[in-house]
Image 1 (cartoon, protein in one colour):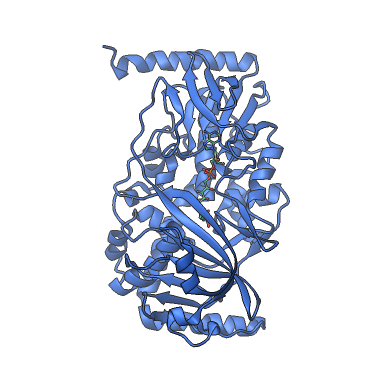
Image 2: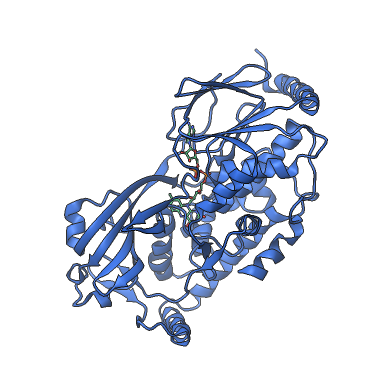
Length: 489
Ligand SMILES: Cc1cc2nc3c(=O)[nH]c(=O)nc-3n(C[C@H](O)[C@H](O)[C@H](O)COP(=O)(O)OP(=O)(O)OC[C@H]3O[C@@H](n4cnc5c(N)ncnc54)[C@H](O)[C@@H]3O)c2cc1C
């Protein structure tokens, strides 16, 4: 029987001979999935391949009728809101650069809003709430609330902030100059290089206890945040947990009109043949190319194939079969309600006493993770967003709301159910030219981490298939990413 050691040199030779071929005639790269991951692969391939390489044809397949995947909008009573990925961190530098490149407008979210932690019986913690539109009152309120938080959680808050900043700083290595940044063949290698791997082997709770956080902060505020951002408890991995905490700090932003425009813009700019409503059901290795078959009965031949969607709940048939570690996805039920909350449900007298963001602690009897006001239309009506681990049935909603004019429910196969120690699928699924962007998702799942993983995949394709890659950006040089962000946001 052939061993891996004897197969590898053959595969390397094959890759080299394909690289020669790629330099003489145009090849086809097929991308399955049109989310931020797939669109970023197309974008970076166009950026990084030198002019000496005949530009590849890029085909992108999307089973839905629109691009964007988990970046999507929903319309409630004529107004548009983010239905999936909604916030970006100020140091999400690929997103910052996409925003510039595509002439999109960034909007920052207000730092001052009222927040309460609900345990099913009472609000165990509540920030101050005053409805006043004056900016200086807003600032004072935000200051007072910081003092409130400090009184309850003390120095642990600073320790939490340090932990998050340290993790974010390590992540920034992925924006280092191309010349000094390796191209990673595995997720493990990529995480170890940035000193992030160890955070995937233990739980967030363990990490936070190690850095000296109080049990109260972990049980309350940290839990509220992980439940909102990942629908999971502090038993999730330290890295995904840190990313979740980073997504609750200051300076968060989004794209005016919807984050999905980043994806639309990238697809439009990357000279992609887009196949909407076309689901790929099989990928067969033909030796020097792949055959992709779609549910429409069409066949496509490509020299390089990229899977830019989580494979965990899909039925794509790979011939020969591939093997990846089992991973469960966390389903997040996102329910939008236009109406008015019922204060009685929360044991309160008036709806104005209910915080704008209601977070919850871990308790199996609690039917939702969070409820937040997306927009207050007037005293009698607001649009709310609810995250829950189970569907919000009508009877339950009728308890929580006194008025309910419109309800929209989305069941997202949202992100991995993080279970440390994480085991990662390979970026290169078959040792040849079948790549998997979402192998990185059990490190953390965000728009930016998808873009970071996609950039690495584009570099892998450039070096392994085309045998050539340019090392400086045609747009912004890599080194200016960090400065760029601070100028605009
Ligand atoms: C409710 C929710 C809230 C979130 N909040 C945030 C947030 O605030 N900030 C943040 O940064 N991230 C957030 N995320 C995570 C973020 O949305 C994802 O990490 C990111 O969008 C993943 O992008 P992707 O391109 O890797 O995958 P996806 O967006 O899932 O794209 C994959 C695409 O492939 C398509 N596809 C699947 N199978 C096939 C097939 N066989 N053939 C053709 N097409 C196929 C799918 O239809 C989909 O369009 C959130 C996610 C959810 C669900």
